[in-house]
Image (cartoon, rainbow, N blue to C red):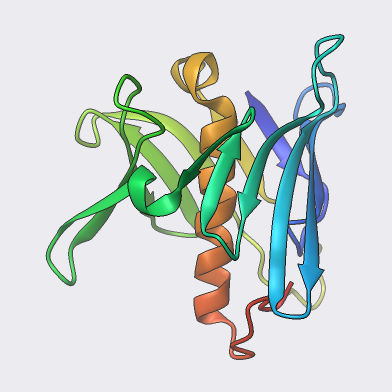
Length: 179
């Protein structure tokens, strides 16, 4: 799946559009309260009849992810390995699912399998303000392997990691960051 985010400056409130047909696949909506972000809801724009359109939620204040009604804390979903300067993040929804190593390099998040041998997905966020040219939209690419099992999970993890990265790099320091 190749997709783009239609909101170039805010991936937390955007529509995810298919790259080929430009139709909306998912919508991300974030609610903000007095103490910062509350929830980011991932809605399927083409749900199966009778199914709920909300397929995933990031509960920012609780630090939990919810997928199809099952809620788990981020602490139990992720683990870190390595030393201080060479630390890697590993995310897994459950013990019977694959574990993804999440890396950020060159304005792109990458989810890999099998000790960085197989790429399962990429989330590039090339937003930099330009004076005379348009900014590129955020792009999402998931392989067939990721689509089959962990599509919603990887989208939420990419959005979560990017929001946390933006929070750390913005000088405003608040929970909402520059978004």
